[in-house]
Each structure stands twice: as C-alpha cells, then as structure tokens.
Image (cartoon, rainbow, N blue to C red; front, side, top):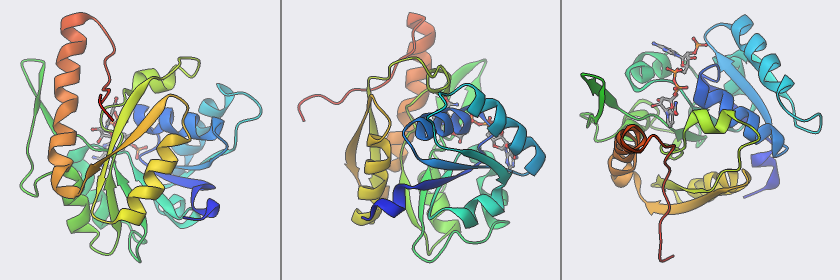
Length: 223
Ligand SMILES: NC(=O)c1ccc[n+]([C@@H]2O[C@H](COP(=O)([O-])OP(=O)(O)OC[C@H]3O[C@@H](n4cnc5c(N)ncnc54)[C@H](OP(=O)(O)O)[C@@H]3O)[C@@H](O)[C@H]2O)c1
C-alpha cells in the first residue's frame, strides 16, 4: 500500500450524517475528502459547514457531485442507504478497475420503531455492491460506528471496526484508513461472506442504545 492511496477519499452520499461524520474525522487526520452528493450545490454547502466545525489544521473537504468525487480519489466510501444502492451505483461510472470501494450500508427495517436486521438476497449490502461493481475491490467496514458520535468532533472515540473483504490488499488499505481516525481500531473479520453478520450487529446496537439510553459500539476481546 502506498501513502498516496490514503491522501484523499471520495464519499458518495457524503451529505448524510455518516458521510459528514467520517469526512470530518478523516479531514482532521489529514486526508482530503471529496464529499459527494446527487446535488453539487448541496455537497458544497455541507462540505463548507462541516469544515467550519474543524480545526484550521484539518485537510480540505470539497463538496461536489458523486461522479466527480469518485474521479478525484482512488478510494471510495459508499455512504448511501441500502435501498438506494442498486439504482445509485448503477448510474455511476468509475467504480471498477480494481478500485477500493468501502460499503458502509446496513440493511435494516423498523418494526413499530424497533430496528431489525434485513438479510438481502445478495447475502449482504457489501455483496450487493460487489455484484453491481464486479471489477471493484469491495470492503465492508464502519457499520457499527454511530454517525452521531462521529459528528461530535470533540468526542473521543474508543471502539473496534470490523473490516471484511475478499481482497487482502484492499482490506489492508481500509484498515489503514480506519486506523487514521484516533480511537477506532480496525479488526480483520474475514471475507465478504461475513459482511451480513457484520452489518447485522448495527440493529442490535440500536436496540441496546434504546434499552440503556446509551451510545454503544463494539470491542472484540482476546486479540
Ligand atoms: N447513520 C449512522 O449512524 C450509520 C452508521 C453506520 C452505517 N450507516 C450506513 O451508512 C449509510 C449512510 O447513512 P446515513 O445515515 O448517513 O444515510 P442517509 O442520511 O439516509 O443518506 C446519506 C445520503 O445518501 C443520499 N441518498 C439518500 N437517499 C438516496 C437515494 N434514494 N438515492 C441516492 N442517494 C440517496 C443523500 O445524499 P444526497 O441527497 O445529497 O445525494 C443522503 O444525504 C447507510 O447505508 C447506513 O446504513 C449509517
């Protein structure tokens, strides 16, 4: 892995809470973020507002359309809802040629307000992304990190991040990316076949949050 691979990141759907939170944390870590949206003007406004919350030493967050964001960085984080993946990713080009694509999506339904895991036909959201982008190197990660806490940029993070994918070198890159955010410890979890299990933890954490009025994350012991 070269340092160049971690100099900049494209954030597709960067205007949502997860995209904004990750963008801010990565910018503080010195990584330029190309924050994408379907609407370039919205992206510019969100990028500006997010940058204003960060110290002056943070790297740039540049708002632009999703397609241009992908063109500007070698690594792409997909931060759009699971239900939107098929339509949105099929409409974008450049998620090929061995590009590292990080799938953060958590397929989830709410039954009377209670979050429940949904298992997609593809097995997981990450496997769906891989099916739509067969020439990308898809890695599942960051499913269990709460956007609300990421966005409180002064909050100290202290949790693990499961990273799964079929391409070991791509997983190395994503683990290195996660490790750039202070307080997040990347943990290799296996191939994309375990992505469904990783994604399924999040609805459980959301239930725990309600039960304990807390902001939960995960910590793998024994490593
Ligand atoms: N929120 C969390 O705490 C959290 C934690 C872990 C993982 N995740 C996962 O991360 C992803 C992003 O989460 P989020 O809460 O930030 O999501 P979100 O706010 O619902 O959506 C993020 C962005 O995706 C774009 N988008 C929304 N609907 C779309 C559609 N139908 N087609 C295309 N683009 C659409 C929007 O950007 P534009 O309108 O600007 O294009 C939106 O700002 C989700 O897959 C979620 O499961 C979230």
